[in-house]
Length: 147
Image 1 (cartoon, one colour):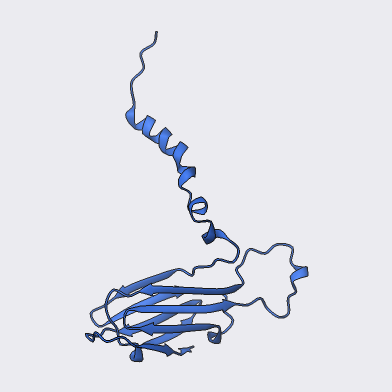
Image 2: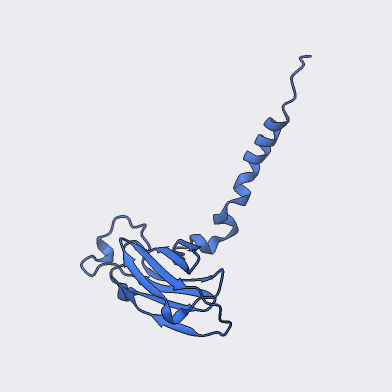
């Protein structure tokens, strides 16, 4: 009989390796990986005077293809990625890019002034800047996106 040193962390690593596939987000949330599901990635941060949301929207044809709505406590980004009119579906050999509508609503960490919010779209990034407010009433305002 050979004595072997017990390595508790090795057993933990083996268990972790065996269990990881069961916690794959694609299995737990299949709608996130469905071809029709697209959630653009968002960063939200705040300064002393404003809340800023930056959203990745690479390949958006026009700022007219995105709608930004801000209320005192949330920002909503709706849009659509369109396949170019010069290309036809039957000519594609392989396609992984998302085409279709998307929607994303994110709560804000503090109240903002929606009527003073501004949005710009540049280099595939939508930036929404919203001045902070101390008001507690609730309104919803649609804002235009400018280049």
